[in-house]
Image (tube, rainbow, N blue to C red; front, side, top):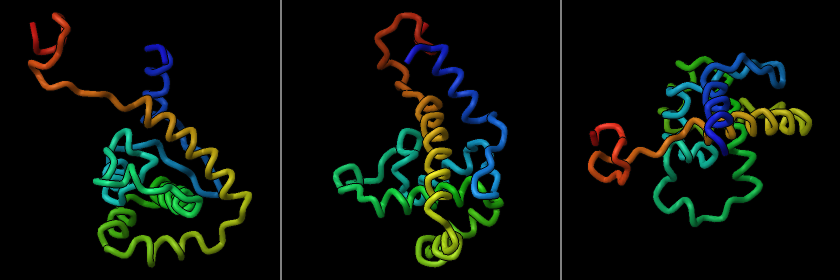
Length: 145
């Protein structure tokens, strides 16, 4: 991916206008949503959050994908205070998510999947790899001048 494309996707990840899916607007990606996704161990955002210990070797089933998709939809569409309360309750997947997804139709899930696909591409573009000072091989790297 060239720098121009990466920068365009990076800006879109954090500044994009709301996307409406299933009647609920999805807000632009925020650090709070990334933190909550990390707390839930969601693989879709692992480019920004890092994969949980051992998660990268577990099989990723269709059920897992639907569960993550629904969780991301929840995090991107509900008030952030409610999301924080739900995630830190310890029963997000057992209580909050089933109630939220009870009336989803297949077409809504497909639309959610497409919207989340755009957001995940933006997440990948927004991620950067940070090299600790002193480990860079570039002469002009920040902090090494």
